[in-house]
Structure formats: structure tokens, C-alpha cells
Image (cartoon, rainbow, N blue to C red; front, top):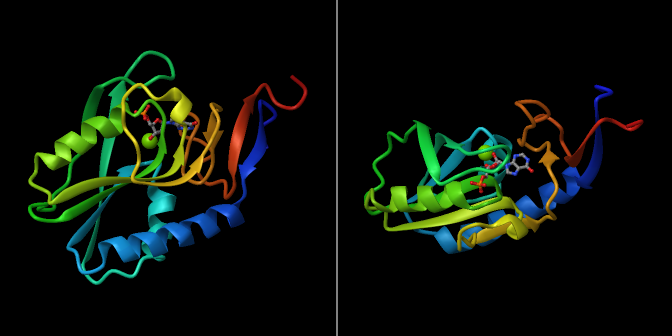
Length: 181
Ligand code: IMP
Ligand code: MG
């Protein structure tokens, strides 16, 4: 591993898998018999999405992705969201569940909820595997949430630092400077 960084496991792959199975059961119950569209937010949600869809049992499920980015200063996002890849799916009358890796300020999802509601969806809810409520700048509350985590920068399970470390199976706190720093 790169000596400039060290990794402290916060949530193990096994704990993540157990939580995803739990969320899958709850979502199966809540979305049974509904026309449902899961909208994954790239790139961070790609692993959570692929695990979750295999733990739900829904007859009429559509899976799609959006890519967004937000202009902000430093590590904080802002309300200025840019849609880099939009949906092709027709959402009218369908129940949309946004699948996110982590909610931090809440700015991205506050914008996306409004944006998707305007496309005549029957409902728009939010499912995130991770939540950092201490950093919230909006009143966004996820409808489904895996874990509440402290205000630390985490990588793995799809989350990156400068596009790296998404592939780590455990969710880890990233320490800059490595072990000897
Ligand atoms: P926000 O809720 O609009 O502030 O932004 C959420 C996005 O910021 C997430 O989708 C992640 O891409 C990114 N993000 C926030 N916290 C972390 C972290 O600890 N590690 C990696 N990415 C993060
Ligand atoms: Mg992201």
C-alpha cells in the first residue's frame, strides 16, 4: 500500500453486507407491487447499488444511474449541482428511490430530490448506505440509511479519495501522512 496513506477500518465488509441485506428486506416490503426506479448516483454508489439490487425482490424494478458533481470550495460541496449524465427513463407515475453512497452536507440530494420530483414521479425517496448528519447544511433526512458515521473522511465500498480506493471491500477512515506521519 501507498506509504502516504493509512487506512483504519470503520465498517467491515461483513457488517456492510449484513446491513444491505436488512435494507433490502425493508425496501422489498415497502415497494412491493409498485413501479419502482432505483437511481444510483455515480460514481460512489456503484457497489452499494449492485449489492442492494440483489437483496430486493421486486417484480417491476428499473435500475438506472445519474452522474452529478457540485461546485464548491475545498472539500465541501455546494448547492450548485451540475448534471453530467441524466436519466433516459420515463419517471411519470413511478416510485423513485435515489441510491447514494454518503450524505454529507445534503446539498446534492436536496437538489436531486427536487429535480426528480419535477419529472412527475409518484414519489421520490432517498436510500444511503452512509450518513454524516453532523455535516448537514440542509434539512435533508434519508428515508433509508445504513450507518450513521462520525465526521471523518472515508474511502472504500465505492467511495474515493481523488478517484482512488473505491475498490476496498471495507469502509475505512483515510489518514493522510501514513502510519509514520
Ligand atoms: P453532499 O451531501 O452534497 O455534501 O455530498 C455528498 C457527496 O460527497 C457524496 O456522494 C460523496 O461523493 C462525497 N463525500 C462526502 N463525504 C465523503 C467521504 O467521507 N468520502 C468520500 N466521499 C465523500
Ligand atoms: Mg458521490
